[in-house]
Length: 56
Image (tube, rainbow, N blue to C red; front, side, top):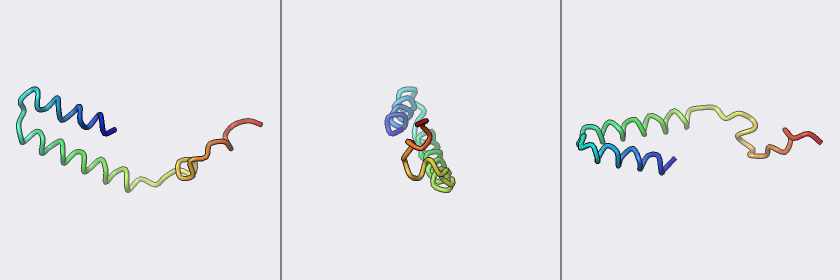
């Protein structure tokens, strides 16, 4: 995900969009982080163990 953020910033700089576009991107990234933090985790995401899903 960090690479995707870096790529977006590089693209904005390359097209010469300027500080307003970078500020908007930073705000978008903040909102994405808040959204991810507020999302409840599913049971299989929280423990990280997916062996239970496999057949024996």
